[in-house]
Amino acid sequence: MNKKVATALSGGAVLALALTGCSDDSGKETEAWAKKVCDKVQPEVKKIQEANTSINEASKEKSSSEEVKKTDAAAFDKISGAYKSLAGAVDQAGPPPVDDGEKLHQDAVKELRTISSKYGQLRKTVEGLDTKDQAKFAEGLQGVATKLDALGKSGDKALSKLQSGDVGKAMAEQEGCKRPGNSPKV
Image 1 (cartoon, helix red, strand yellow):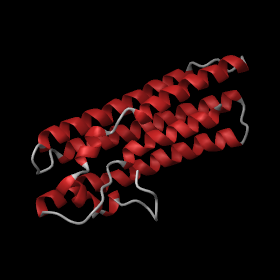
Image 2 (image 1 turned 120 degrees about the horizontal axis):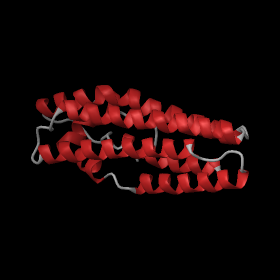
Image 3 (image 1 turned 45 degrees about the vertical axis):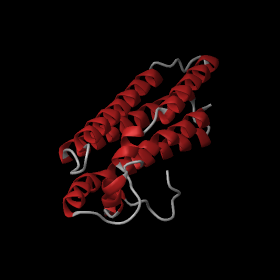
């Protein structure tokens, strides 16, 4: 059951990586804006990846229900904090210097804060699961996996818009927004 949680969680991490762009460079103002955001992205993406790893390890090690519960709750808390920090980074950078920059900025910050809140709610849900009854615990984890899947599919429209055009080009050039290695585009 925990493998479904880990798989769904991986989908949610895609939203953090959606801040990365592709293509070549852009105007100096846009580059400066992208640098403000991207300098703060990489540490948060790393936290999300670490949380994913902890959930995967807990499921592979055939951990007890109590250990799975504790690991998942801590991971969701970490992810919630990472998305909150990503929202803060975008918010502090202000609107990008492009047409419709204010709307792009507001939409991205709102979406990142919403994702943070939803992961916080998942943490509370996991903490409330009954580990004494294996069937109820598995059923509860299935419910969490369903919510995670929905969260992963909830759409990253604002972030996709944020990474498009000149802003996306500028972000792609920033070290903090580059994908490591030859990771597939998300």
